[in-house]
Length: 545
Image 1 (tube, rainbow, N blue to C red):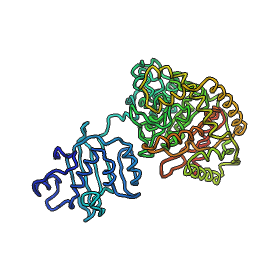
Image 2: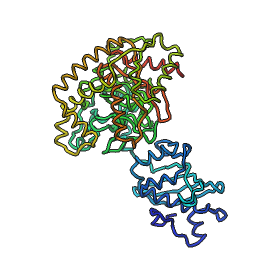
Image 3: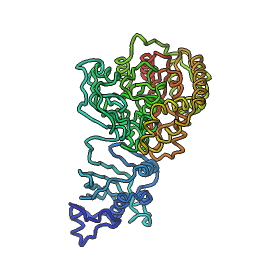
Image 4: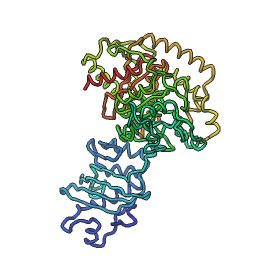
């Protein structure tokens, strides 16, 4: 049944009689909706269409127990729901076509409504309403304490994918990765397709690639198939996961939070079950950070161990290609299929070190939670030695990395950026502008500091495994302030720079679940210990379970 045209307004439909009400509700004659519940329903719907955040907030119950769920996950608590709503940018326009009400008690009722989005399809919303008693805030004092929203399923979530197939490219018939579906970050060459790098203007100028990137070909030869080309932060120059052109990929592990970037598309595809393996790049943490935020395994391999032929550069002195998966075995198989086994080395997984300054860089919940994980590993007798060491301060590592990476990024892209004003999101454009300001003298001093830091870290670590947070925090909410995001970025880059500056492999392992989402423990091993590092992490997770 179609609702009146003014269902989008703050007024409920005018009803001429009890029979009209009964028809609208499509209820048996013996069932009456609670007083003013329909008034509240239509007022809420009008506020939703107007994106009236204050009114929408008044219509949701207070406290930590209210819930809102959709295909992206469950939000529990008024604070998380408000945060999601403020960062959403409004709900799609729609018309309510049917309502069903089932009173439960005098103060509770179950409401299901069907809507027709302007974009097509049908949506379904179920709500548990409660008469809270404050009639001045909402009609009759009715508020929502639980809601589930089902939108029309998209043929393709363009926040995650730029190109999708079934499959897009077929691999070998057998191999270690037979049957594994891969989400390829949109900086790798896929035969017959253009590279977009998260930038529509760059995509528009591109040409289809004749050959796949070497890293893509290795996975295909091992039996994997390419599910599609996944989105990335623009030119892979971010660790947040936002993309103003295509939308921010969802974070299934922390609904309403950022996915982490720049391998955000592959990470979201894997975390949501739309792919088994993500092929991404990691320059500043772009595999480790989304892995940490979304509860995935993520491996940045030894610098130079994976060919970057057919991969768009950002900062060649730091760029690596690596993998994301829901389990360590899949990451291990991808690494085995790609890396030169003769160049790999063993390590003693029972010898590990920690640096207090690295943990102090992280938020208290991450710092304390991961300390508990390490303590549990020690109690499980996974270490013969767990030694505290001193390393260069993360703040100094961040400054070294920032200057040297930025100089390289400017050389790679500043000419294109200058020729395409307005093509990039504001934060990425500002980053390139700062990169272009780095002088040759500043870069040279930073390179000297980098060499000294690398020597100091190598001397302190030797052949042992360094344990540290993969990121400085859980995934920030979508509506996090620019100041908060800047703080998280600097702190996280101070951690991720350890592997970047030394060229050592780094593996993020999902070993911690906090109220705000997952957090990864990062293992940094000697150069060439990529496969052994995965094996060590698998042994540790087995011991914990």
